[in-house]
Image (spheres, rainbow, N blue to C red):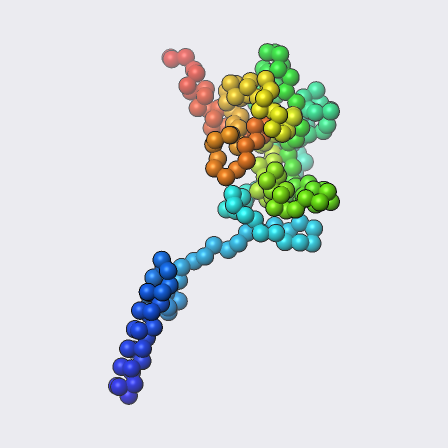
Amino acid sequence: MVVQNSKRTHAAAIFLACLTCCGGSKAVTAETAAGTGAVSVPAKEYVVIGEDRYDVPAPWAGNRLAVEVLVYEDFRPVPLQYTKDNTSIYVLKAIYDPLIELLDAAARQGVQLEISSGYRSAGYQKKIFLRMFAKGRSFEDAIRFVAPPGYSEHMLGTAVDFSPSNWRFAKTRDYQWLKDHAAAFGFLESYPQYGVPGFPWEAWHWRYDATEQTVDDQLTSPDP
């Protein structure tokens, strides 16, 4: 019996040594072989659109947003004079006042900002994809321009798109005004040209961040 146990121990040692040498950059130890220290592999993320499931690739993977349940009473409509084609667009009440202050300030300086999109639920985001699929676009192509359902800041009710919501916006006076003044009202460009590796530049997409406004107030307030 002693001899048999010795043989088994020796065989196990050889087996582990082979795995360690041939297993690539991750060495296999007795602990991992026993299942007590196995390397965890992140589960793939996916979204369901229509009847199909799609894997979420980089850079979106790992950036799914956790959103609390929102109801109608949590929102306020943006005044129609500030929306593209007088469309009904809603934002979270928490950002309504600073957003209107920003829009009014721009108008006083001759810059007429128009909002083309505000709050969008994950369900609405799926409809955007379904419309793109109907036009022959693939999921891989669509996510180059639209965040997958569950990953868009529009779900939070704190982000808006300005018109035109495409690359042309970066060449407008509106964009330059936002770059110069939006932070004073607490708004940030979510996906600047060189700011977020892997994400496409969206000059038209801005979100409200109360901490930015607080910092700006502190920096610009006169000394006591």
